[in-house]
Length: 92
Image: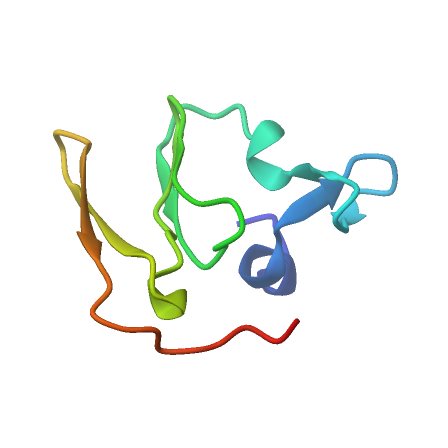
């Protein structure tokens, strides 16, 4: 409740020096997350699946023809299904 909504919806990496959103040279936000409450996130295709004690990331690039990853809760079992096609070609 203390975090600005813009940060919550746009954070990927974090700059601990100025406590602002970081860039590709900074650590992912979840390296700084020390709470016990589980956070499940997506929309970070470059990272792929992330599984930690308190964080699970599900994005496996399905839109780019890779996999759709699902989570069965509370067992924390991950399932992956191959994409049926490439839905979006990334710009290089």
